[in-house]
Image (cartoon, rainbow, N blue to C red; front, side, top):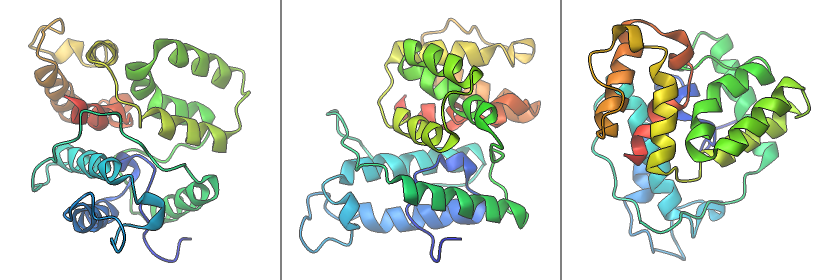
Length: 227
């Protein structure tokens, strides 16, 4: 178990309400400063020089809070340049996963149930990957089916994949795949050019009809940040 709440790398949907709020308060305190503060900044050393990535992480947390019906202060404007993230520390990630599992064991669950194996992990992240790269989506699916990826490395790959900005076409592709799970309840045309409205409609229907597969998908909230 981690001694203190760290800056989490795992998707916000895996965090319970208490930790989600703690993460948001922590990040608001960090990114409310001038993002070019440099020396003397309260930003952890690992994240110094990556303040715009921290701002995106805060937006991801807030998107998850909106999905859960909670108030947020408002999304931050993110640079149009490519975001540079610090290297993902596998040992730290393993500690985070253990901490989330411990919380779940104590009855404190996030929106997304903690994956128990590589197949559940892939199902959790697959539409987030699809929004970024169709070939990677196909390759990961094949590798998971053949159980050729150690689960810790799969976790790292999924997190790194969701740090890449998806194209509008990629988001559309992922949303239309997700649409199939709610199409029987839908009232809008999935071919609409308004991807924000489409994403919101999928979120609403998934919650109203308790569509488990979507409620356990990272894409249900994290793609909304990019629209």
